[in-house]
Image (cartoon, rainbow, N blue to C red; front, side):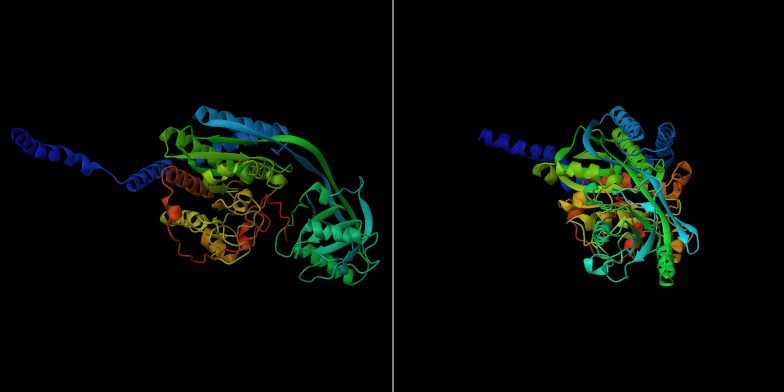
Length: 511
């Protein structure tokens, strides 16, 4: 009886003491969302384009003292990778180099001149992995492949004897550049000139050295059509020199991840660190590399124990065909692939005549590649919502597979990211939407010597660093948005807004 009385007296006290803790108990999903929102706001506020610009100055300084570029396999890239590695160590990340071998390429000559009937010079870009002409080039007549949906893709396109000892003029479209030049070689051509089927310079790759059969270069649509018109009036003789140095070299990806966080929910972001050999690559892709480095620093300061592991990557040899990211993904275990819940790519995020492009994860624009792996639509939506809240206009761009998201998509990892345009031409509508100049490339210095510190648009840089910061802050704690349904809405984007031939860029192998 006394025991029951004591119990009766104690029960209200227990309930009273239990009540406050119950009131303060929070649903884990709500807590994750709250932590994510708080960290995202903090990172967006603290991540600065001005601070990231300091990294760009370092990349420029490195290029200036190492032959003018930061290409994979060069001293410039090695020094850039060492700088990024040291900064990340200082911030407290677990950092590692991932070493791999690749075929280093460097253009030694790319010249095309009409000798007759009317002499003139034509700008031409050597295709990566091309065969080389002798020093000084060759002089030969042109022979044009009649344009159709699959120009120069089949043996039947090359009339018997017509191309022997000549240089084939072939329009882009229908098959890879490698297939075109191989078919021309089989028909007896001693070189191939492929002209674009859209505005902008044609800069591409044959895929690998084994594919190269004859010296091959790319020219603009206008120049190609002009040469074809000249040929319709009679023989056209040209001087043609395409030479490329090729050598097996080693290079490093730089991989950094937080010391804490659930590895089973790894959030990954990447940017390629290498430039082309033609210039320092400050927009392409010092901009994405510096943006990631700035946000990584702010994350290290703001959050010591994220719920999810955050991993950053600075890829090498992207300009040689996505080789760094391909090597990384190929060497992931099955478990490693499953642990990566998303991959966001940032390549060229400060183009001087920029457009603000978000990768079309749900294929709502119905252009080019299909939708990305499940979750990609949500990544696109999350970026678009962030940009909308900040009043930043944007449109979609196709998953062309020409940057480092490509290998992740291939193994089913949700992917996304932003891009501000390469050699694609800005339209009148885009000039009204984003500002800048219509009829001019998003980046007139794309893959050129002029891609230096003066080639950065700080407005675009700031917006995209905000995108990175918001994504890192959100997904470091909360992945629930990847499970929320998406209402697909066309954005007006197209394959052209991707710059026509964006990285992997110059690594367009598919027509």
